[in-house]
Image (cartoon, rainbow, N blue to C red; front, top):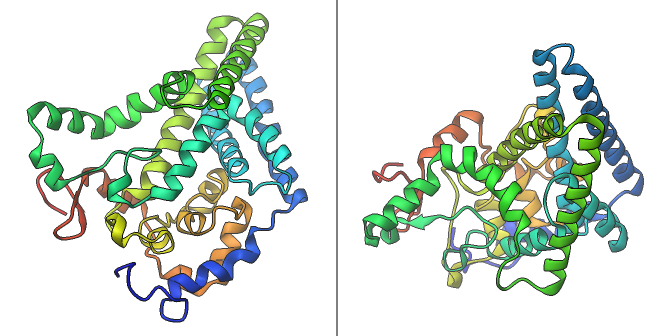
Length: 336
């Protein structure tokens, strides 16, 4: 489907649906508060239980750490929704809640969300890659690279590097640093987040010991970071994804053809805050996560997007280049 063609709502059902789903973007204060309660309270409670469980059983502690990491992923989804202004009607409350959860998720609110909004405005656009996305080269660009350029890209796209090393690098190092081009507000927010994290680290270390704090926090953060990065990867890196050049790019079409629907079991859908309905999120980022499932059920056309299954997600790991000639993601060997 070419986004430059049939862009009227009457001619293109993808265009019409964006108007039909606007009714789901009205957030519910009670549902937002309830979701915060059933996520934040268990997260803090499990953190406390883990401290005491270390003297009982390391296996029990390991299980609780994995469970707590799931709640941290869910906290990040709330942080994410606040940045889109979709969680509360009040943008002041969105900012306060988002900044607080951003601290718990080791992520500065302003820097991350400004980059994320740029991602929403450029997703699937081959001419505007590089901000808030997984770097993807075209096959032609890769073949034109010298050996050093190919090595760097292969290294970056290696799953062990991307998820094993990259996840901690992003949350522990990259999120702590300012960089050229950031606004004063973004830099101040990074300093504030870093100071808040340092304060939490010192206080908790005084209560439970520095080594205990580091072991628990790093374990939870690492599992949550790998899981979160995996979710982010699947959202736009899969077999049937579509990319366009700027002249053909249209955000409504790309939302449904360049953003995935990942079909999770109910328990994982809950912990991931319905982020698997990512095609709907890109179609309308103002819909809070707790209405995405309802929106999907009540709009038949959204079900036409082929779901990405677990096996398909594993296959996507070897697809690392976009082949403009066949309009498909391919491996380094050129295979689909």
